[in-house]
Image (cartoon, rainbow, N blue to C red; front, top):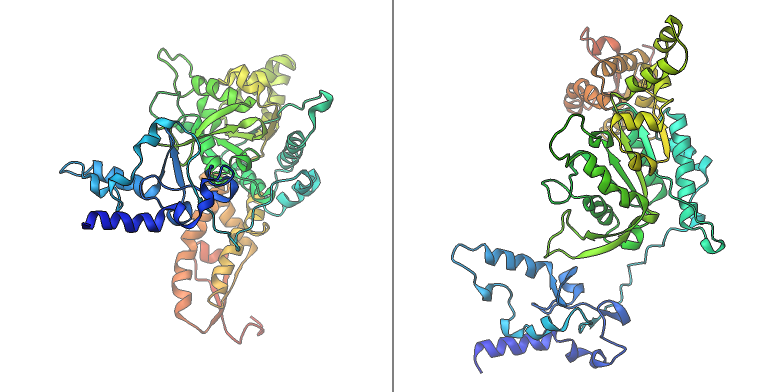
Length: 481
């Protein structure tokens, strides 16, 4: 017996499922992948799923693990050509090529090892969904202001999960109520949705509409939105079908005006999103953002997925003003009345017709029946954002300094100056961290060098460059200043 036959024999004794468990030949035993207490086996290296990791099922009934797949790609990319013996340590004669013509039927498996420390995750139940007032109370702990938007989101989410768990035997079927968030940049649209998903403990996918294009063109396909949700749910289709999808920058796919060529990133994207928002079964690639013959796919039903779209809609305010000027009254009184209204008051009066004039097609708007407008952040709001939420920015810096056993404090006048500088950047709450990072750089660099420092107070004079922060040494915190 040569070395080749000896290796083949040893490998067969180690990996053949029939050598350890004769029950795999029974019709109720090893017929099926994950059913009946058996697990998938890689068709190339013959390792069970518990040893090689997740196994992909390819067309033709061939199972392959990620290691063998990567070795195959590496072999094809070799400059000297394909070395078929490098694909796996198992001789190529061990691969049963006859299985390729038998379709995607059941394959031989090995019995799964009981996972003692792994508990199945409980599925979402309607009793686990909090009432609207509790949802808003949880959002209040993390989000400052935006009272109307939080109330609308709380009711929309609660009614959505009512629809998911409702019984349609009486013939009454509740329709989907997807949400459209309209507000200036940095007002908290993404943060609201991310906080909501974390509190409800459901999968969340955040996609950017600017990268979406019509199928067949360069860019991300519409299915990539659901691919991100499936990855967030650890490839659990049932868990993903109860998740939340947030599509940001939705105003960027508005219909382009005076465009002679095909609008592949605007109106066409809206049309392809229609069936997804309405609710349909869509074939989604698993572990990738684009369809590929080598990538497995899964069918995802979107009828129970809550879609939330958000955008700044920069020119929408002017469209609403023009409509109000022509409908309220005539003469100088109407112009003065509309000019005195703030941007928040104008956006709160948005209608479906205003969105249509902006460039959103009527079919798309109709699938987003719930519209919530967010307020523009003021200096007072920004100061509250700095210090009130559970994970406020100041609390994060205080926690960092506390690890060096140093107490960090901010004077109210210093917080107002930071908020005023953030307002000038016109990027909302996003500007707060960048401003604080600039001021805190020297403090977080110098303070750990001196173990005698016990407390640091940030003053307005320090932020204006008129002096340094107030430093109190250890043991002197109780002394009068």
